[in-house]
Image 1 (cartoon, rainbow, N blue to C red):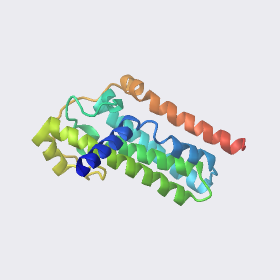
Image 2: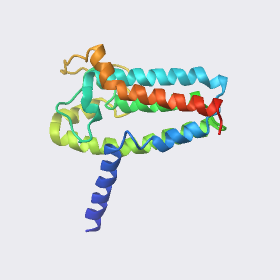
Image 3: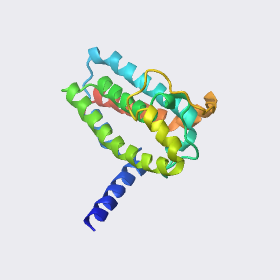
Length: 202
């Protein structure tokens, strides 16, 4: 009975983070904005992290499509093409790179602490989400997903792309921009708030 309760609680927590993964980083974003204190030494590095993170996201979304924004765990097919041949969760990798970039761009009294806090939050969140997703994908795709897990890591990319039979084509540029529009808007909004916070302190 105790084990059943723990399993149920774990499922509820993981489902919460999965369904609300677009909103759970808001407290982190607000903290970054509040403590914004840019340093010239970190601005270029931050911009580089942000750019690499967004390009990683766009590359990933071009293969996975709009299903990446679903609130229902699962997938119509197992995507192993493009960046998914290097790492199983390239969108989450991209998100972490982007937020580290935003931390460095914004600056703070203690940039290292802010970066580590941000990274720790995303590691915690994505650990919960990935464990939930992998249970579902294992149920849906069985041995095919097990083979994928054996050859491609969850977060740390391979040096060479895993050979796969997934020959899907990426989205066209216009469809990709339409699919990724909300993320681009969110980044622009956060950067605007950082600019306002720095130039019009309150």
